[in-house]
Amino acid sequence: MKQIDTDKGLCSSFGFLVFKLTWWSGLSYKTTNRATFFMAKTSTSTPRSSNVGSSSSSPMVKLAEDHLFTILLLLPVDSLISFAMTCKRFRSLTTSDTLWESICRREWGSTSVDAFKSSINTSKNQQLPWMRLYKQVSQLDSFSCHKLPDPDSELMLPTPRASHSLNFVSDCLVLFGGGSEGASCKCSSPTYNAPRVHILAPRLLNGSNDLLIPQWRDLDDTWVAYIGNDFQRMLKWQKVNSGIPSGRFGHTCVVIGDYLVVFGGINDHGMRQNDTLVGQVVICENLGITLSWRLLDVRSVAPPPRGAHAACCIGKRTMVIHGGIGLYGLRLGDTWILEVPENFCSGTWRELVAHPSPPPRSGHTLTCIEGTGTVLFGGRGLGYDVLHDVWLLQASEDQLKWVQMFYNLQDIPEGVSLPRVGHSATLILGGRLLIYGGEDSQRHRKGDFWVFDASKIPSIKEQSTPSNSMGLQANMWRRLKAKGYKPNCRSFHRACADHSGRRLYVFGGMVDSLLHPAEASELRFDGELFLVKLELETGSVRC
Image 1: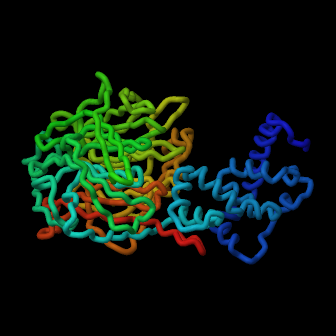
Image 2: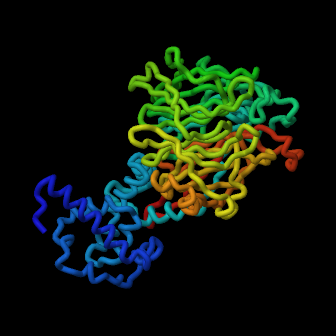
């Protein structure tokens, strides 16, 4: 093998070696897997090495370590693990935490990794056990729930509510709007017992079966609580008075950079809205926390008015919305894209017309996963059926297209409970979605947690044949065990994660009535804020 001394030669040689390494590691893949590799890492025994790996004539042993490091980063994790198990010479490199930190950045995103590093107590030069962390996150089967400390009862607190928005931006929780009973603000604790709400189908407004209940009152208040990196701090909610946005519930609020973008919603008269607003949090040492809202100029083109739709940020300055309840209670199935410039002074809406596309629905979720696409899950369809289908919006040949992820509920343990509406789906550490709560077709609230593993999503080519990928995609789902505090089952709550994706905050929603908890037709608004935390062991580093 010739010395690699030019970019051209390096690239062509890398291509050949990546192929050879992948093929080579595949020779022994039938006899090894991730579990045995991770166990072998902590074992005192010497792993077996293949004859191929011990060959001094292999061109790979002549590569400089930084070149080999670059090649290894191009391999899928399974191929990397298999390669490490068959080659003793390169084992120290393939098990180094430097390599695994790079792998975590590749698969989790640099933003999550940097936020994770800053959120734990570690010295400046201390290396985290990234290989162990990767294993724990990839094999995640449980987490812990914590009821946050009750603040001083004399403090102003957000009213119990549902179908509001909750976001984490600029190290703060921002709560806006929603539907509640009575006045928009009370001096009360988060356990304030709101009056019962009776959901009776004949009394629903405009044919909707999701949100438009006569007893709801829209809220126009905005609340901010600083968290920073101290998730155990006692939250002090601060009410922001700005006059806008107007009162609404069933709206969406998406974080784009350091800005919040609100779209649509429904007021207590049943009117749908299609305005777009921008908010920005500013933290000043002397003035405290301020939040300013303003209407975004989108000119003459905007999506039709709606509420109970889904939205998320894709890319750096782009938002996507889908579905919802439009005029006269009609469920929508359209997709719209909003693009904003760097200064957020204006925005441009355009409709994305693609076939196939998700059928009309409301009360569903959209969540963007870096490097994978945008995942749509669940909701209530045209016939009021509660759905469990999964769609992926991703770029193909420079165009956005919808692809359905086919799977059978019967292939998933406890999968019969997956269909839901009014749930939350939040991106957590490791590029996975944590799905919580919601309700079924009988309006029974849920309190279960599921993880959707996007890393198991097959390629577009594999997706083109549903029958071949059905079994594979069933492995994307796994129900998790919750430890610690047991919150009430709920629907139409809101959840958001901090920048690291390790801590999830959940607020509000509809919960069962205290007097008649067994009756699905009776429920109440909730004002509880609790924390969901991924518990990770990092050796001597507290995490």
